[in-house]
Image: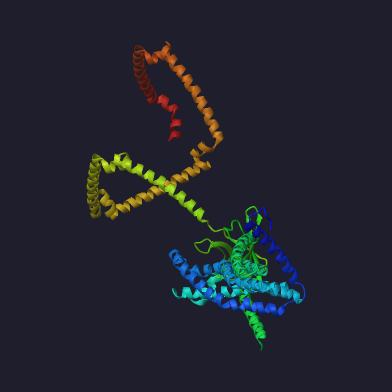
Length: 258
Length: 348
């Protein structure tokens, strides 16, 4: 550790360098045989499917709540007809990806961090290296791949359920048909809304996986290290989600000129 | 099915379901943007697209039939708008349909509105260009309103000054409203008018009854017949005069010759010259008569000469009488009769 910087700052920069190196390692192992397909599917099940309930409940509530919150304001303006597309666009482009990614980071990121950290603490990772199994490939590549592919899918589910939730919220107050709600929701909805959001969620998933794996993989020894890894995984992932979101917005603006 | 296989199936289902949602969403959006269905590309050239964007709707009779595909400058103030129109619905867009850009709502989103063409016109083809109508801008309307309000201000200002003048009693209207003598005169005039009309009524009644000349004129049929015949005579006279003047114009008769014959004119001119000369001579003669002591002058001017001339003439008369008497006596005498017999016989 460099001595000319305060320890925390030095650690922060060394962690950044570590994550970059870790990402390089990930890509190096990703395309190299043998592929841990079975473990990848297992991780998909654990990160994707097992988060579905959490995401579903959150998504329905999100759609419902936003609908109920915005409706009076729009009704005052006489623009209640705009509610479906306003809610839907805001959920699909921004709120859905960010909120579901944060939930995902909380549930899956902390799990990965804690799991890998405890494996490190109990020397299981070292044991794998000895037993000729590549621990990085088996533990990190499968998990990061799983989070990268599962988060977008979860966001699709989430968006869909938010759409339903938003309809329920509006239906409670006005006698709108689903057909009308659907046509209004999609009336101002373009590819320029779907694709940037989807690409963004791929990055969210990837960085949640990388950061969580990194914190777990290079955990300090001891039970304290496990807790800290889980904690750091969630905090760092959440922060990175917002950073990526910030960059994504500007890139979208730059590329699509919106 | 063991535990791991079960997980694989669940993950597979999960992935397929998730991707299905994604694909359906993309399809729905794509359908709206006409990306997957076959579409015709129709163009329109506007001067001002008023913030139209790619992906904005194209409407015909209120139905969305396509989307704006691309926008770009053609020249300085000509914007080329390319639209994708649903192939199923393109037959309703005629060659003489016209495109215009309108606001969709109050919030400023724009729509390309296609106004239907005539029934007998042909439908558009791929890559056709529609005619456009530039919609009146809100700013233009506001400009007009501003101009109108300025005009109204000027007009009201003028009205104020006019009413002020009326209040002050300037001009005819001012007099009408303020001058009491004027209104008094007006009142008197109107009374006079009433009187006149009453008189007129009386007169007209008299006329109706056939009293007086005018009454006769209207009531007496004999008089009217006479007037009619007089009129006809006058007409005949006029026609005669017309004929005469016509003849004069044509050179017939003396007066005609007078007006038309140039030779006669020449003679007349010469005659008048001669006449002038003659009168001049006469003037000289009379002057001489007045002044000279010639016999003629004496004859005219000298009373004594006249008297002696009278005596002479009297004497001459008496002498002649005597001679006549002598001559008769001679004729009566037999000697003379004998010689003059044959002549008398011949006379008989």
